Amino acid sequence: MKFTIFVTQQCNLRCTYCYIDKKPETMSLDVAHKVVEFIYKKSILTNEEVNIGFFGGEPLLRFNLVKKITQFIKNHPLYCPDRVNITIVSNGTIFTDEIATFINENEIGFGISCDGPPSVQDLYRVTLSGNGSSEIVEKNIKRAKKSLSRIMVNAVYTPETLYKLAVTVEYLTSIGVRHIYLNPDFSAKWRLEHVKMLPEIYEEIGSLYMKYYLEERPHFISLIDSKIAVILREGYGKLERCRMGQAEFAFTTQGDIYPCERLVGDGKNDHCIGNVFDGLTQQVSLCHKAEGAEMNAECTHCGIKDYCMNWCGCSNYMSSGSYNRVGPFLCASEIASINTAYMVFEKLERQLGPTFYEHINGAMLNKSLT
Image (cartoon, rainbow, N blue to C red; front, top):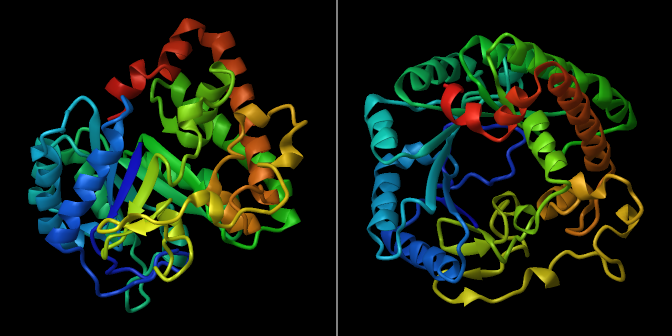
C-alpha cells in the first residue's frame, strides 16, 4: 500500500512542469495524527508492505515536522519495522548533516529530483528568482552520496529533453548515482515526432545499462529493470497495479484525501475523495471514467498488455482525460521500453547466465548500488 503525505505545499523552486499548486500551507500536528491513524486503519486488514512517503512542496523546508510525523508513525502500536517503509522525496536544494543522521538512524529511503546536467536541470527546475538549481542540487547529491547508504534520483523528461535522456543517465552516473528513475511528463504535449524517437532513445539507455553492468558497475534504471522484472513474472501482479483510492492515497496539508499524489493539483479539483476527519466520501470509480467503456478496451487484443502500465490511472488521466483510457504517448513509451528490456535481458543472459538473473532478483541491487 502506498501513502503520500504533503507536509507542506511551500517550495523554494518553481519547476515549470510541477503539478502541485504552491501555497503557504503546512500540515498541522492534528492533521498529521489523523493521517497516521488513517494509514494504519487502512493497512491493518492486509499483510502488504506499507510505503509512506513525505512529499510537497519541498518537505525538508519543514524538517522538524517530518521528524515529528516519523515519530508518530514509529510510535504507533501497529508499527512494524519489517512492514513499514518511510521515504522522503526532495528537490535536492536542502541537505545537512542533521538530515543525514536522521535518515540513517530511522532507515528512511531518500530520493532527489534531478533532471540531468545543468543544460537540462536548469530548463525547468528554477529558483523563485528564475535562476537554475543545478549547482546546489549536484552538490547535495554528492553530499548525500557520501552520507547515506543509498540514494535514488528521479529524472523527469519532456518533449524538449527527450533526446538528452542518455546524457542524463551518463551525467548522473558521473556524480555517483546508481539508482535512477526516468519518468516522462505525461501532461506535456507529446507529438508524433517524439513518439518516433522513443525506440532509438530507449535503446541508447539499454546500451548504457549493459555497458555499466559488463564493467561491473551495475545500475538500477527503472526503464529497464522494472520491465525485465515484469517480463520474468509474465506480467504485472494484482498488487503491483494501480489501486488508487483503495490501496493508494495522498494527503494534503489540510487533510484532504486524493487517490494519487499526482492528482492533487491546486487542491480544488474533483479528484478529492474525502478528508481524514470525515473519512472517504467518494469512490474513485465515480471520478473521471470514460463512460460506456471498459478499462482500456482498445488494449484487449494487444500482445503485451500484461506487461504494460495501461492500468496507471493518473498517467492515463494526464494524457487522455480519463482514468481508464490510455493516451497515445503512454502506449508508445510502454511498447518501446518493453522491447528494450527484452533486448537487454536476452543479450546479458546470453553473456552472463545466472549472474544477471541474480541481479534482477535484487541480490546485487541491495548490496552493491551504493
